[in-house]
Image 1 (cartoon, one colour):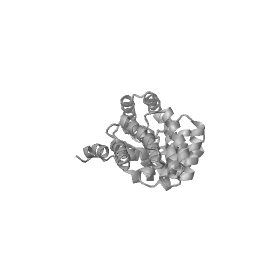
Image 2 (cartoon, one colour):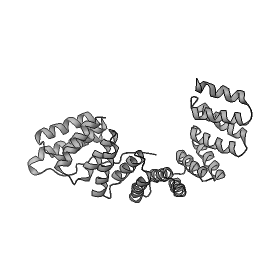
Image 3 (cartoon, rainbow, N blue to C red):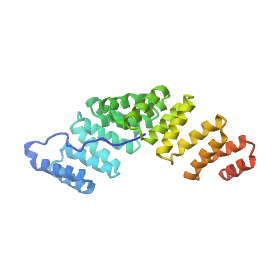
Image 4 (tube, rainbow, N blue to C red):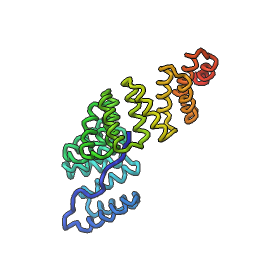
Length: 288
């Protein structure tokens, strides 16, 4: 599943007239933050907080910067402080949720992101990150709702349709998943990973010919998709085409020589053909 942050860096509120220098400082900090200078932006946010320790925007943006620099605990502390000052600001809850998710606190992350989505139902980023957290928590059925919300907000995005399709696949709703993948491919027909993912859903549905067509298209676009080779090999093996299966398994091993799944599947094929010597030659190194 594709995961791209969608957050804005704009301050969420305007400081009062008595804090005009802080406002100017934030604008410059946001400018260099957008340019990728995280250290410089953090320094300016800290200067703003020295002038106005109660500036919720500066706390939020400093927290976001720390999160982007990998200091998730520091980010969480600043973002919680910002929320204490402005508890109904959706962006603060969304940024806290992202920092908590990166820190591994997925349940807390989901709670923060749920608050963000409720406070601002039009925030696609909050719905996206909440869906992602729920997938990581093993709750794909719940995630589907939020990925659907992202698609409603960004209907022309093949990426978000593919995310929805993935959640539907994980939750076992295969027909719906296939349809979402098809909609994604209508918008981006040259997406090799999406073609391969649709193939895997069709394979699980028992539509082997359609699945093979998807794998062939995916491999035309990107011949190094190991899973497409392995899945196509499985279909060819199980439908009585061992030579085609072997071609795919060996292609997968050429891409990833140490891939144990590729080795095991080729060994299984040799075993079924009665070539136990070749099967053992492949399997024994894995056991050792």
